[in-house]
Amino acid sequence: MAKRYADALGDVTLTLCRLRVGHAELRARIERRGSLTHLADTNVREAAELDRADFADLCVETGDRTPAEIAREVAERWLRAAR
Picture 1 (cartoon, rainbow, N blue to C red):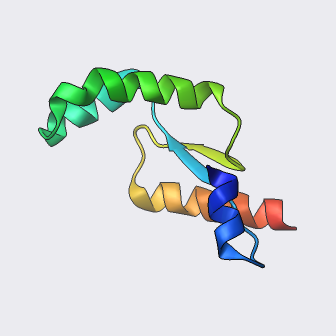
Picture 2 (spheres, rainbow, N blue to C red; picture 1 turned 90 degrees about the vertical axis):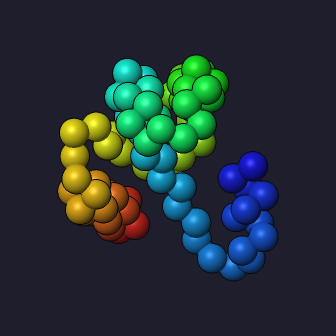
């Protein structure tokens, strides 16, 4: 699927970044959100499948971190990879 998106963009470089969290924290986030909680098991199973896949150029752990910290790491790792 990622290739399809990249092909649709034409002559640009696309970097795929997966934001990941542990399964227990994923389940807790879904429960805290309070929306679509009946899909928690499905989401955890799909996350496990993504954990086994190697589709992203970057994979960043998000547990116990602020959005600013995560964004900073994504930017730093992207810049290092682009060099």
